[in-house]
Length: 110
Image 1 (cartoon, rainbow, N blue to C red):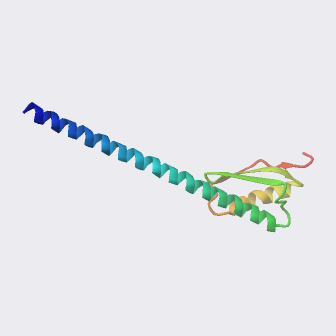
Image 2 (image 1 turned 90 degrees about the vertical axis):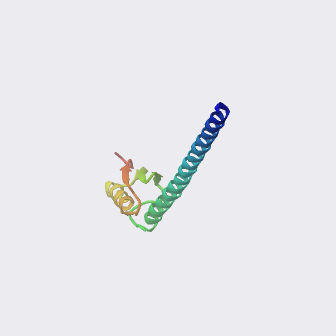
């Protein structure tokens, strides 16, 4: 009888380990997919903002830099005026998918 109990116990442990491994593997794969999706979304947000800068006559797409991490946008670089800095922030906030904007643009001469 003890041998049967021992075999049953081993099977239970193997099943437990196999299920645990499957759950862990699924979790890791899910995280990798999320990170890849966030990276693509962040790249798309950055591209949309830069495209808007390029079509706007008051904002320099070359002097203002955009970085996006998990939907949070950071603007940096140098603006010719306070109005250009404000306009860049407004444009960034208007893009779909933007969670927040940190407007760290410096104004030339300040």
